[in-house]
Length: 160
Ligand code: FES
Image (tube, rainbow, N blue to C red; front, top):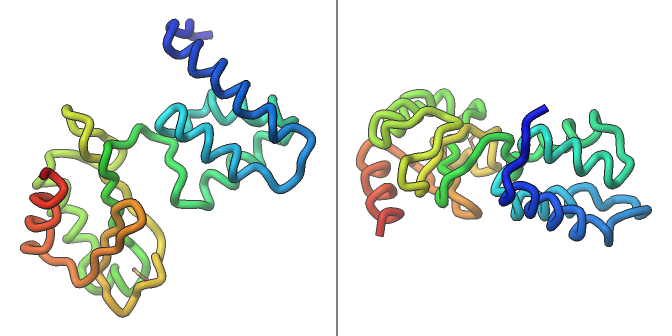
């Protein structure tokens, strides 16, 4: 078993305290996981196990919620998480090329974080804005009709 650093130990204490208010309540898993993600920045396996244990919820249920909702990430994320929609409408309008362009411009692969901690790349399911395909999601913002120039503008905007 891996030894936790002092910082990690503190984060787990913080999480345990944060989860107190959810104990014994139903329908709280999403809120609890959001808090866990705020504390750790993402949801690694050990954090999901901790949440499951503290709330006495089956780990499989925690996994299924985390994998269903795109707001959760099981890998470290940058300050700006650029999610390329890979839904059907976006896919047929060049989402794959967009994803490749983003990787080339940022020198990152999905799941990696830039050295300065500012950017990470991910893919997502349909965001519901198919009419604007291909779409990139950054936080709550959707950027539609994306192309090469759009990517350059977006990255420049986010760097400021
Ligand atoms: S498929 Fe991309 S927004 Fe629907």
